[in-house]
Length: 452
Image (tube, one colour):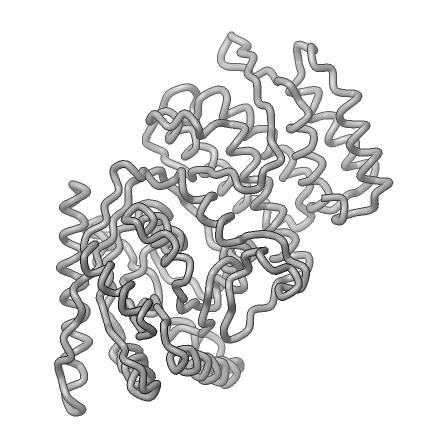
C-alpha cells in the first residue's frame, strides 16, 4: 500500500510502530493504540495512510490483551495481508462475552479498529456511521464464529474491515470512481484494459459478505428454472430477472446462492440495474465496481431535485441505449428490481411485504427485448434478504445511510419462465402476473426459512 503516501513516511511509520511495540507488555493493547495515535498526530496522515499503518501494525503484532471484567485474556490476533478474506456483519441477538454480544477476541479487535477510525476521520459527520457499521460488522463476525464457523476469526474481521475502508477512502472519497451509464465489472484479470487495476472487486464483494450469510441454512428454490435460464443465455438468448429487492448485498447474495446451486461462473456474468446510491455512496462504490451494471436513476429518487431531473432523465435514456446494445449482442442476463428500490418493513405488523412492480419499468424492458430482435425470456425472482442488511424504514434520497448487518440465512426462488400474457391494451396484466409469481415465490422462501 506504499503508493498511498510517500515511501519515507511509510517506512518510518512501519518501523516506529513495529519496533516500538513491546510484544510482552502487560498492556499491549493500550500501548499499541497510544503509539498509533502519536504517529498519526506527528505526521498528520490522511485516512488511507492511517488505515494501511494500522493494518501493518496488526499484522506485525503477535498478541494483545483484552480486559473482560476482572480478567485479562491474552488472545493471538495475527493478521494476514490478504484482501480476499471475508467477514460477517452484525446480529444483536446474542448477548454473551461482553455487553456488545461479541466474544473478548472480537471485542478487542473491534476496539483497535474503532480507535484507528475515530483518530483518522477528518470529517466529523462520517465518524458515527462508520463506527456503527464497524461494530455491526464485528458483532456479526462474532455471531458467525459462535455459530460454528471457526474460520471466521477476529483477525479476519479486522483485515476485512480495514480493506473495505481503504477501498472506500481511495475509490469513494479521495478520488471517487466514475461510473458510465454501463459498467463492466473490474476483475483485475487484464490490468491494461482496466487502466492498471489489478484488484478483483467482484471477489472482494463476495468474500466480504459470504460469512454474513448462513450458507448452510440458506435456500435456493427453482433450481431447474435457473438451469433453463442459464442454458438460454449460453445459446446467445437474453434473460431478464424481475426481482424484489431487499438489501444492499442482493448482488452478493445472488452470486453466493447461485454458486451454492452450481452456477457460480454464470453468476459472475449477471448485469444489475443500479440506482444512483450504489454508484455514489462512499462505502458502496467498491462493491459496485465489481459488478456489471446499467446505471440509472430510479423513479423513487428522480424527482428529489427538480434542477437535476433533466440530467437524470438524459442519463436514463443513455442507459437504456446501452442496455439495447447489450441485448442486441445477445447472451445477456439482467437483474432488475421493477419496484425501483428496496422493500420496506411495515411498522405496524413488523413484516416485510414485496414492494409493487412498476408497470412502466417492466414495459420498458419488454420493449427493449422486442427491439433487440434476439429472443428474450423473463423470470420472476423472489429474494428473502432483508435481515442481512435491513434498510432504513423510510426512503432516503441521499447517501450515507446507517448500515445494519446481521448473520442470517437467505433465500431466493427463480420462477418458471413467465407467460407472455396481456396485449398492447392490457400490458398491465403481465406486470401483475410477474408480481403475483414473485409473491408466491417469496412466500415459499419464507416458509423454507421457517419465517412465514
